[in-house]
Length: 293
Image (cartoon, rainbow, N blue to C red):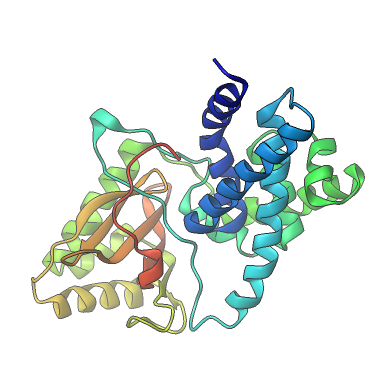
């Protein structure tokens, strides 16, 4: 095998992990893929100057650094975003025979919480706590000292713990709740739907100014339940919500002729839905993606 072929093979093996890192830092799959593609070009240039002994280690630092730069730039745009900004969902077909998921590593609920962190905090926590990088490596990527990134990760850890579900549920429990949720909404069963919702549930819709969406989150089981049933009635039975994996957990989607009209992510805490996130912004609703993140 030629040197170039060996380099390409090593990068191909590392790519799934690199995309996950870039996605967790940036919050969008499109930007993550751009970051990883750019890294390959830089990798080739660096290897021509001096052969790299550990392709994945080198690429991880470069991808993390570039993802952080991308996030900092994106923050300015997101501050001017129309309505709430939600991360871009990672979609897969719910096929048990071909189920390779993100699981809890980059769950949608986690992605929402990460938006509350500063870019440096987010990067430090993602790289160390999520992907197991040593603080010395994180420091190289973030451009801080190891002691500084240790503090950044510690602060981020507290925010993540406060914002993610208190009780983790397995896939079977999550899917049972989602199935019951779908049935209650489509049948207009308000009492059952309210029992499935946490009393403090929050519903957030992201339309990006290009699709109908609430400008502010809706709170409380009764308000959220009535809004969901009302939204379904407006569809007038024209579209049926279909199951789809959203960041490795079962969610729902309604598809038009050539694209998704919306994707719905449900966060289940214990046996109740604590968050309902509607993604309606057209640029975040690419065609169904299958494959390993």
